[in-house]
Image 1 (spheres, rainbow, N blue to C red):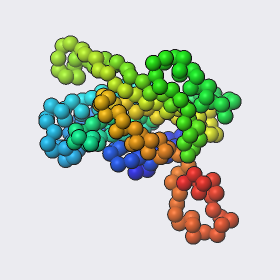
Image 2 (spheres, helix red, strand yellow):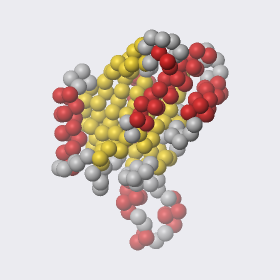
Image 3 (spheres, helix red, strand yellow):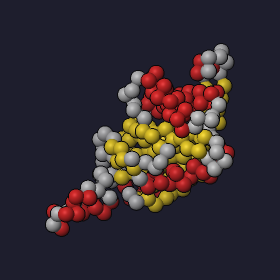
Image 4 (cartoon, helix red, strand yellow):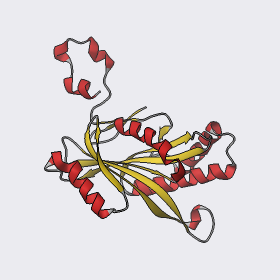
Length: 225
């Protein structure tokens, strides 16, 4: 599935199991739709498990919207042992001066390693260029009102953040994946690699362009398509 965000232009091609969330949809309608999807995809899942997934997803979504997310996907797949596992992928486009642009991934990786000493930090090569990558565990508060109880609790999540310098505007693209299913982290990694490879600063190639004379091709788009 290909998804386009607002300026600066950004396209995402998402793997199976990643479903874009309509950020303008009514909250109640969105939660009802998520519950219906769970019933369809995982009919044998216990009701309390489904409720927990829906509430956790909406709580995470609201936090991401407050931080300025331009795209959010709900990631719901079945693990190898049959257990339904869930995560959230959010994409942010943040204004930031990048010069010198070519050294940005290495510079930000060094900064993240210093700021988050317990994180796994590195630089990866993607089709659209080099990017900084950081994975870490976080403890996040869960208000008791979410579960209809007076006391709040905490939840441990694992988060993977990819930081990509935009090639022609002073912005950084941050793709952030978060999940509570820490025991299934190795199963998430291939899906995340596919999702990150699907990020592009050019629209998906229009195959009809192949019927045009070579001098009319958009060479940049074809190179990145």
